[in-house]
Image (cartoon, rainbow, N blue to C red; front, side, top):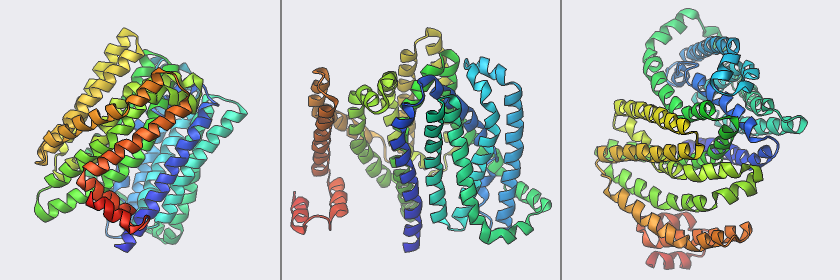
Amino acid sequence: MSRFISNLFKLTTGTMLAQIIGIALIPVVTRLYPPDFFGVAQLFLSIAALIVVISSLTYDSVIMLPEKDEDSMNVFALSLLIALGISTVAGAILIGFADWFGELLNTPMIADYLIWLPIYVFANSLFFALNAWLSRKEQYGLLSHGIIMRSVSMKVFQIGGGLITATPLGLILGPVLGLALADIFMLRGLKEDITLLKSVAMDRIKSLAVRYKSFSYYGSTGILANSISWEMPAFMLAYFFNPTILGYYALATMAVRLPMTMVGTAIAQVFFQQASLEKNKTGDIQNAVREIHTRLISIGIFPFVIFIILAEDLFTFAFGAEWLTAGTFARILAPWFFAVFIISPINSLFGVLEKQRAYFMFEIATLCAWAIIFSIGGMLGDPIITLTLFSLGGVLLWGSKSVFLTRASGAGCRDSMQSLAKSLLISIVISIPLMLGVFADISFILLLVLAGISAVAFYLLIIFTDTLVRREFLEMIEGYIPLEYVEWAKRL
């Protein structure tokens, strides 16, 4: 167990540090590039994302499964061969028809940068394959350093490019070169296993490809559907509006999703472990679902309420005055972000409860809903209406997913609904001084002070009204404050 905890600490520490560095450097990047350049870069990354998820036909996820390292190395080679072929074909098509794609997506500038796409796709595929191999060999320290190097070098190249000459190329080359450096660094992890390359043979590669073909068929389909649902808004905004609108959307989602993902991924890992353990022990997971989901709602809702109130001021303060519209977009999208935040951790229930077909149906429903919503918004010609419909649609879709999963687990949705109503009411009441401060147009620093005071009041109220949260909090701080204060708090 201690070895497991040590490995988990190495990996999560590296991931969190990479995310924190990435968030901290965003304000520097936004002051070097205008919104339309962000839109071009976002479109490049969205196109690449759709290709990356199928670039190895998910064989990279098989690398950890074979019992023998020789078989694993053959799967590693298989995933890279497929990735090389797909990235080459995709690159040839996109580069050959670059101008047509630029016109189709209403972003002619993208045609000049599609030449970098096959390099980015293959570098990303290699990164995932190395991630799986290093995890198999328990080289978590090296993997963690590679993740940090990718994040830091990406921002450094973007900042360097902006200082030399600000063009979309700087924003695009950042991720490309960041991945390339991380790959080169992580390839060091193959030095001890270099002799395994002798075992790579085409006959064995073909045999393993057939053995694990279900990963290719079903895994790629589900992942592609999920990726399309996440990337479709970028394509639709580019098609119906312009790169500047897409740039505002890109920053709005990036600035919120990075910290949200950092926290949500950790929660999801803990929840998946607890749900799986409870199912194996008792065959019943409703207690784990009920306890974690309701408290995730009560703890997570307040930051989003504060964010809705301060979004525009926060974006102009952090990223510059020209990003005010991105703050408006982020405020509109905040309800959807909150729905994603509280539901993503229990998404693992689709696997725990063996509801893969239902998962696929939800993904298809999401794709259809996005296509309809953005088509309506695009025809109206108003990005505010479009994103409002998108946010409301996201809340309804993710909310229905939450209802399905909580009912399927046996926990029901009544407790979650009660927690949502109660926590939302408390959040609004406690935030009234902050709302008045915004209305009175006081300085942003004072608004942050009011937000901090409101946050302390809200979480103290949660701690002292929720027995489970209070117990977990006191166990966490025990040893850092005098014992008599801990005992006093336990008696409250």
